[in-house]
Image (cartoon, rainbow, N blue to C red):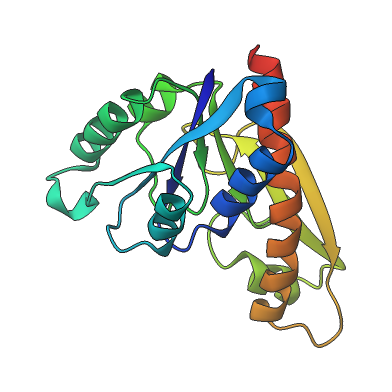
Length: 194
């Protein structure tokens, strides 16, 4: 069985989209894959309660309890490795990971970013797209590399930027697209990993 470990920091809507898709499409039976665990850097992350209600193992590790980013990443990797992951999925995990952590999971660590990369890496993507006069915006699933939001692109979803859009309105439209493309990209990567 190919185990997927998902990392979150908040409500986990992308995590839920992946879990729901995995069950509706019977990833375990058809593809030998399952979401084995959901981990967070925040004990009160809403997505942890949802994952527990779905019978998925959960864990949390407060990054503020560690003296350095490296120490946190080392402890996090130990928790992840306890689930023998084929794939580690960042779904709203709001921590920049160290190069050593990224190297440990090279080729099997993915993220979703709320812009059409390479446009608008980093934060405030929706407002930046509006301010730039973009006609379209969207989301990108990409492999994680040591350089922020620069890994190989696995999937993209596009939405129009409409007259009068605000950043929150555009964000909601992009999030719906994220929920559609992320599960497909995860499944595609699992196939590629064999």
